[in-house]
Image 1 (cartoon, rainbow, N blue to C red):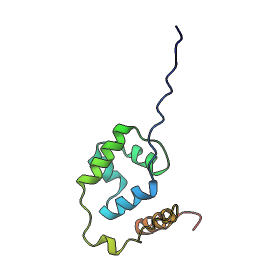
Image 2 (image 1 turned 90 degrees about the vertical axis):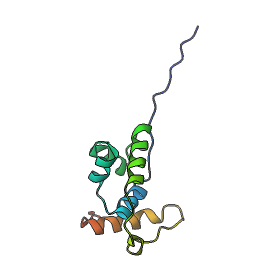
Image 3 (image 1 turned 135 degrees about the vertical axis):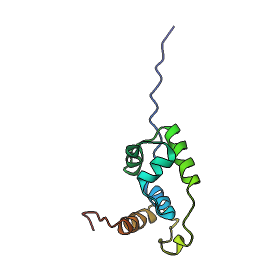
Length: 107
């Protein structure tokens, strides 16, 4: 009888630019999303920086986003999201950073 090993679960990677966009649409910080979602703020930070989430934390964050209403009219202020692969992420991240008052070294 042979013993097979089960590969460890890697986790779920999300699109950080989409998460930033959703935060901006709601006018909230990642800390507020963490509070509403019931996850640690480091979990949100890790997700925004390319880290993997457990399925459970992904579900919690998704539920948290659904509980927080969108700001009326915020779509008028945010850049339009483009469908083309990779084209919207830099623009959205840059806009979210601008709204937050933070800039990256590359700008």
